[in-house]
Length: 258
Image (tube, rainbow, N blue to C red; front, top):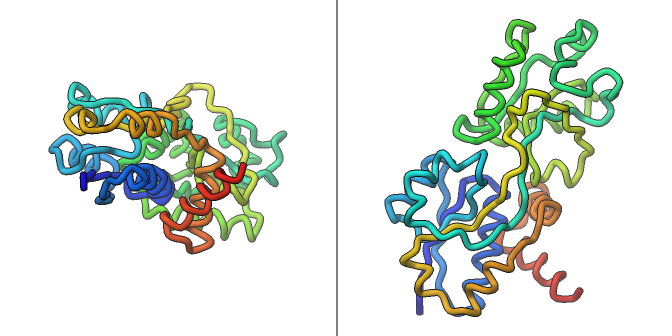
């Protein structure tokens, strides 16, 4: 039996994508070894040959800087979804008051808005973009503070804040499970610091792709669940306590009935 080592960034929605890819390989008779690491470390492991495939690289804005040293040995197999980063607010925050990042500087908004902007790990694209936003819009001078932390710190702070109907900003992205449950309005960001829309690209080393059969390669290239599906899978994992494999199986079963 052929073996494939699949790596993914250690966040739940990346685990959901990896589970979908794992199903494809198992369907074609491959044995799959799955592992996860933080953003930059995962790409370094891929570059060292510790994993054969990475699910997935957000290209070009978020992860190209990590993939660049290894691009010559990389095959781009397909695009799973189209992610993009946002600074968002709960939809109960009136758009007439807060429609853009610049509005965070209005005195009347500063009086109501939470000053702590809770992010995730420092290697994430959204974290890099958020630090740039803090600097370019002089938000620290207005009392705002951006904090890196565990992903559950970010998500939990948002959910608790929604329960209390507090005004707050969340650095987030699509797809992500909070979008499956909550209406989160993206703020306009005129300076273009959030990277735009990426392509969540399934990448693999050239040497391993040479061993893929034509049907396997075709199915991998065709796999494109999209943002809404990944957000739903992520919600099942994070809030309905399903494993990535269980969530992927349920989604695939529904797709087969369509």
